[in-house]
Amino acid sequence: MLNKIIDHFPELGRLSEENRAILAGGLHITKAVAGTALFSEGQECRGYVMLLSGTVRVQKTSEDGREITLYRVEEGESCIMTTTCLISDEHYGAEGVAETDITLAVVPPEVFNRLLKQSDRFRSFVFEVYARRLSMLMMLVEEVVFKKLDRRLAQLLLDRKDNPFNITHQDIALELGSVREVVSRQLKVFERQGLIRIGRGMIHILNRSGLKAAAE
Image 1 (cartoon, helix red, strand yellow):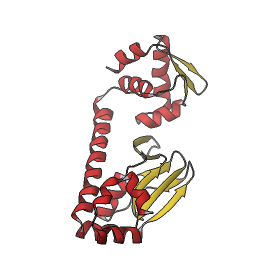
Image 2 (tube, rainbow, N blue to C red; image 1 turned 45 degrees about the vertical axis):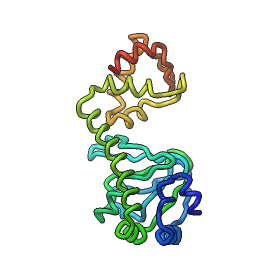
Image 3 (cartoon, one colour; image 1 turned 180 degrees about the vertical axis):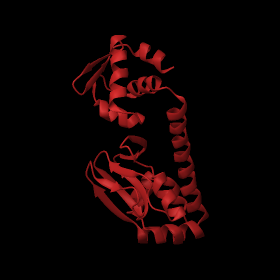
């Protein structure tokens, strides 16, 4: 089982034999179907998570019910929110939902803390991954605070590889930390400008260069 995890997280292959045995002894593999709530705000953290397949969306909900996607965890990545909870011994401050069917490896808190204390290589692995994810989160904060919604929306549309593609206005609002009405209004502006065509739950990009100009 450990070898399968090392395939996704090769840095763990550099652990000493003793520490690899400790890690292997505590690991367990779990699966979940798309739509499963993996953790929720205020919940206690049950272990360090390493995603082996699928995608997890981590999101935050405000008091008035608005949601924003903080980040996604993809295959070969760990969750910064989980790491923060384990290190600070605090409960989750956001919600994690499986976007697809997923497989993940979980290191129990006692094993995680033991390795963090005694293994320089494990500690480096954890904090290097943590730093990369934190940097991405800071980019999101910068976008939300400083970048106008129309630019962020244009970039979100450009980032989609398929055309046309299925997505609801509510899903876009969730991605951008906005509300559906505001997103729908801006999509209509893009449509009037001839950049996109809007269908029921579908968007067709007509002018990528125009969208690129809007994003910039």
